Image (cartoon, rainbow, N blue to C red; front, side, top):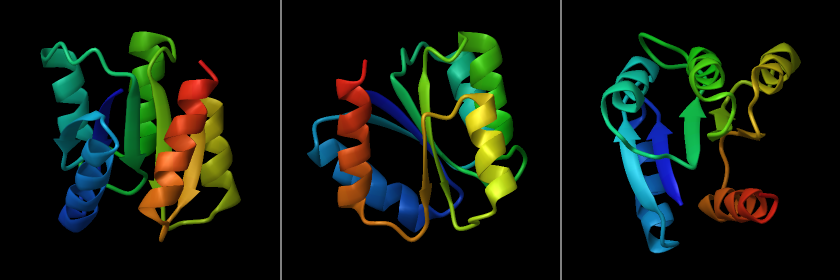
Length: 122
């Protein structure tokens, strides 16, 4: 799969990049939602999945999901990561088209399992 990860936590980005590359995925990194939207707009990434934190500078994960929904009609699946377990944020993410939601902290193994589940549901 071709996966874009958007997170302002550099350690999280590098950890997920390492794990997902080890799992055989092609990985692209973005430090915030605005940069992720610019990458999607200006580069032909042909993404299968976007993994995004909710709270990021410039543009949030929810704004990123909305952008993907508007531009790609949810053909790019999204997984949202957040330390916030607020029900209204989770519901909004799913309303906007998120395929899954993972609360931080989480195991990279859990993320790999959820990505595999998404691949099988296509």
